[in-house]
Length: 138
Image (cartoon, rainbow, N blue to C red; front, side, top):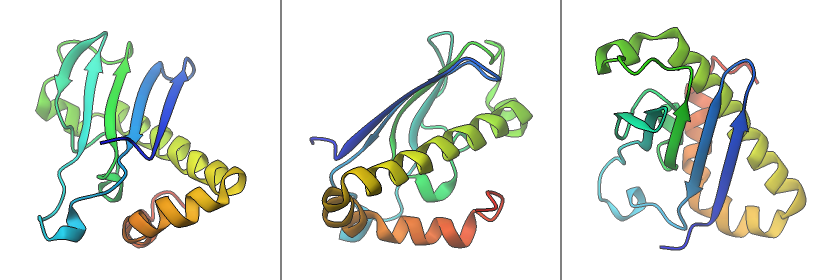
């Protein structure tokens, strides 16, 4: 499967984040395969903390595949602690903001690709995000 688009993100302040996201060219929910599971894995200093972490991105972004690595996460973080961590909430907010910025840039610079390929395939997820992700505020 060739990805529709990719996003490589690196930030040093206020959080050390290295993320690589892929947008698949299609998703399986429209074929009646059931709800997709999150596909972004969480690493700390290149050590896997949680595979397919449901907490690193909002639920409406479940179509994204990729990895997130951070030096700020302690290696001793357990799954239960990762779910409740305020640090995970900060990652979630920063990564969501960056992905929305990436989509905005794609819509402005490559409007045909955005409309014909991305929006036609993932409009349902974006509409779900508008309804569910009220914490974003925009």
